[in-house]
Amino acid sequence: MASDLTRAVGIDIGGTGIKGGVVDLEAGELVTDRIKVPTPAGAEPPAVLEAVKKVLETLEVADSDIPLGVAFPAIVKNGKTLSAANVSEKWIGFEAEKFFEDGLGRDIHFANDADVAGVAEVRYGAAKGVEGLVLLTTLGTGIGSAMIYNGVLIPNSELGHLARPGKDKDAEYYAAYSAMEREELSWAKWAKRLQWYYSHLEFLFSPDLFVVGGGVSKHPEEFLPLLKLNTPIVPAVHRNNSGIIGAAALSLGAMPQLAQATAAD
Image (cartoon, rainbow, N blue to C red; front, side, top):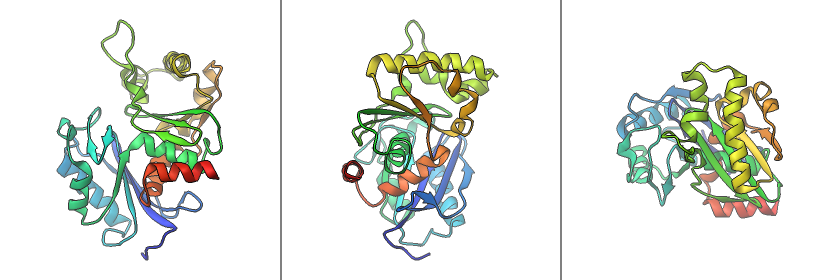
């Protein structure tokens, strides 16, 4: 596949699955099938790298010079992963960007998975042109978050790990989509947990818009109407593809450059 400045590959590494696709950067849409493989048990670095290679091979871009962005479920600073909520603890303090670049034999752009989903929604989706503070949350294995103020991303917010007063477990354990599956909750019972979570975010940050992404965003009609908030709350336009699209978009430049371009649209 020929490389140009209008297409890039996005890889979205999650706690249960690793997804990828080739993205049209002008339209913000996948131009290939979305390829998904299971996240290896234990999610240690060598096994995750091999799974990413499998996705790239399936997309037929393993030997291409097409730009590549990788999204990962951890705090990411200067290419290093500083946390590991749903992957091996071996990622903590790990030079992840260099590890992937050496293993794949190419330059990449590496960032937090929820942050890149936020970039996708700012550039192409529900947060485009929205003034003020947008909080994007991804509801899946955990809860990821992206904070966007006047089109500019504030990285590594990690709002899924807010403490719950008097409880040992954080907001993510209580209200992620995985909690609904683990405890076999109905949509209505799960929505009560989300009501607490989004009301708490609303009190802390007074946002202008909530955007909900992650796998469960395919079913917004099941839970969003059950929430009573003062802040508008909408599903991510790109649903569970936001991570792929945002990672691809960031492959051509750093976050501030993209944010400035987005704010100028």
